[in-house]
Amino acid sequence: MRWGDARLLYSSALCVVACGAPERTDARSPVERGVSLRDEGRLIEAAATLEPAAAAGDRTAILALAETHILRGHHAAAVALLEPRLQQDAADADAAGLHAKALDGAGKPDLAVRAYARRLALVPRDAVAAARLAALLVQQREYVRAGQVAEAGLALHPADPALQIQAARALLGRGRLPQALDAARRSTELAPLLPEAWLILADVHLVAGEAAKAEAALTRCLELDPQHADALRKLGTLLVETGEAKRAATVLLRAVRVAPASAPAWNALAAARHKEQDFDGALQALDQAVAAAPDEPGLHRNRAEIALDAGRPDVALMGALAAREALRKRRAGDDELATADDLVLRSIVVGRLADHHCRHDRDAAALQRAVDRELQVHGLAASPEQQARAGEAGLAHARAATAYCPQPAKAAP
Image (cartoon, rainbow, N blue to C red; front, side):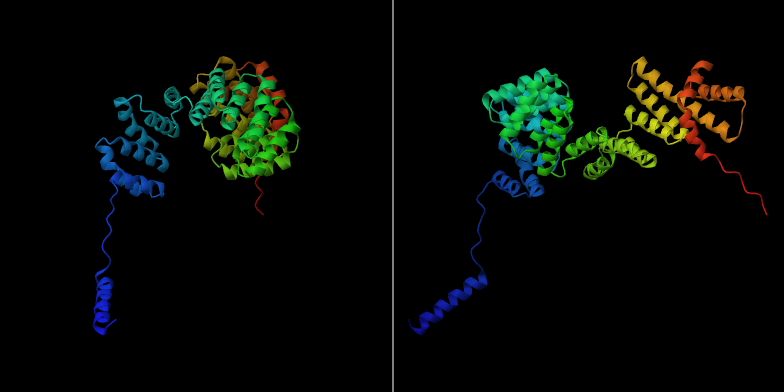
């Protein structure tokens, strides 16, 4: 190569470096770019890229944007986007499937049931939709229909463990224990590494009263998923019932750490602490349970009963009144309301008994008048015989309450 040629080649190389390589243009459409961004997990950019085409009515963009909304947890936005599409074309199977997922994620189970049913009518072989529809129906206690959905799905997908699990749940809900056990065992055979398969097997054994087998299944579930909140709660509850309160409390502490908003887990922890005579700890756990589910009358009732055992009739009365109010909101039956009224009566009688004992007051008539006044304040009435029975039933509670008698002031030196 001559020097001049080399110099020319060198100059050309410098120009490439200085001027930069030719710009590469992205030949993809906005929808293609949006889908690519979504698949890369860049959901905010994907949504911004897809929105103009979706607003213009592009079907692919609408579906891609809806799926992006679902991935972002914006289920209501996905529902709003998909409903006009389904009004335009009710046979759009892809839109129907996303619509069902969006309603499900938005916490609208009744609408989700209908949406999954529509998806299955369009795509009968959708095993995922069938399993989820059956699960929602089990939650709604529509066990017969749930079983029908699961069995129809299994006819097409006999080795699908999710459908097998829901078939077992539907059978369990109908009280058909042998068949439920067969289905649950089949699910563990199909998916031995799936925690939910072992959980349904444990549920069947629990209903059958087979504690040791239930514990073994729950233990296996937790080996596969140590943070499984339902398995932790159920194992803790089982241990309480079998008299292993200390071990139960340890397991249930794990449960509430995993699911701090789970009222059932806090309630189970309260039961474990109650068994250990840790009344303060039990009441603290129930405070958390009530905070998570303030309208659940059973939690208020449990709080009242434990407070009585703890010698705290004042706290028991608040719990009993809250239980009665929650039952009234639910329009509960007369029997449930009568039970709540009895708890209010016992709390009042125990409180007045303890108060009279602390004051060394032996005036029985005065005690009855005090009880009558307090009952009247809370809209109740009870005969002297009913009050006497409540006093006899709560005598141990009244003795426990005397531990909180005010101490007499010390005389000044």
